[in-house]
Image (cartoon, one colour):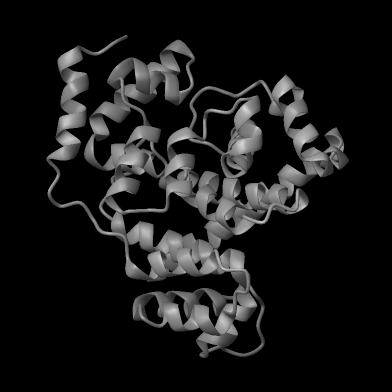
Length: 303
């Protein structure tokens, strides 16, 4: 199952030789910084987004697409942003920008770009909802982290698609999760690939940490790293729900683990989610994510 050491080393070296690395659009950088502020105003968000005319057009196209059932066409960006709300604004900005960055990524029988976004947006929405329930001050950062936590999968798929094809085949053949298959084939994971591009983009340390460590959680970091904690939880629930690129089913749910008890002891308000409530809580966010990806897909199809 293991690739040769030389091949493993070549993967790292090849990443460092990439000269056409796409840059992160300025609008994302500005928006990430602004959304961390305590008092967010739609007027200021409109000023940021207006610096990117194609993004403005995409915002107006989505709000006028029929999904919102508006009686009249909207041509004012500020009004469109108020209708969309912060979650959908943030999702559109990130999805549109990342789509533009990775526009030449090739879908195939194992990598489903739409499913990638359903998982990312589902993780973001669920992480934000759980963080809100726990009254976490950094809940907006949790949302951003959810959108970006798996960005490394796009990096590997863009630059090493045949390696990734083999990773999915290994995962299927040996009934492994993708992270384990990545280690076995490349000795290099999507979390490391994500951290690599996050470094190149000079993302905030909090986001880089989640991108690198969202699969890792222990009792100590539940207290010391709440953002990673909520993305870890949301990611696990999204995978269990089936909103994932994983080729083998996830069968162990986090709420049945000792780790969940430590999480709910640290954030007691989460104890209000009994099993039935928790299932409904997760279902709602995953369904919202799927519906929103369909909106994005439809507006792109119409282009």
